[in-house]
Length: 176
Image (cartoon, rainbow, N blue to C red; front, side, top):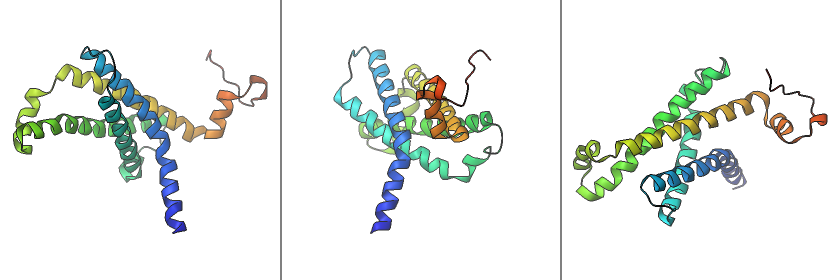
């Protein structure tokens, strides 16, 4: 029982950072969607959908991180790993976006095959690509942040971000 609780705690703590990040991202995107459709506010339905989406993508990223394909560039410069992981995550998010568009059509048409036939016609493509571009931007930010944290360590990053300049052993030169 204790081993199971430790596993659940480990999984929860591992899932927490990407889920919080994507919780914020999905709410930004829900707000952007609302603005694009001239609904100047966020409904409870879109907020709960954003929360569920954050949980799904957060866990999907953790699952993807466990795949050997995700580590193809871990020994190379950080930029290669960031670009590769971003590419993989973009594919995952793209699949989720298509599913998000397909599910209402399944209810509308009653069958997956009929809904699939109407999917291409009924997607609002400018909105779809605008949202996907936002995802790409946030995925790059996420991957750069996790890459830097992995390279220098969480404690060092916290020290750089929140310690006073005189207490830091690392000097950050913003001028290059």
